[in-house]
Image 1 (cartoon, rainbow, N blue to C red):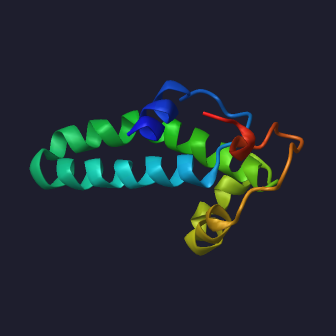
Image 2: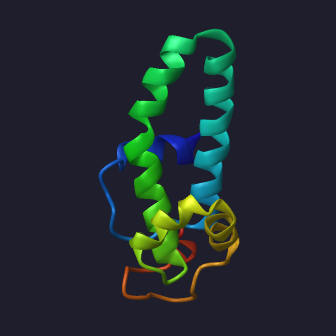
Length: 107
């Protein structure tokens, strides 16, 4: 749940990097909430989907930065298999042009 809240707090941060754990924890919780809302409260589901659109794009761009790709690759979501494959790749070790490696940070 911490990763989910961290992504929402950083909803407008499109620079830097996001590790696999941050991205996939957010995605998993987001899917669970979406399914629960869609099954019970359709109107609230629509509001929720719009509300998490920007944070979802932001964390996706930061995840792409972690593997050394430009944020423009998020447009490859038109062909979802390409984006899904890239999101599963391990991040580049050490700092890159987008910032430090999130795995190197001691929590």
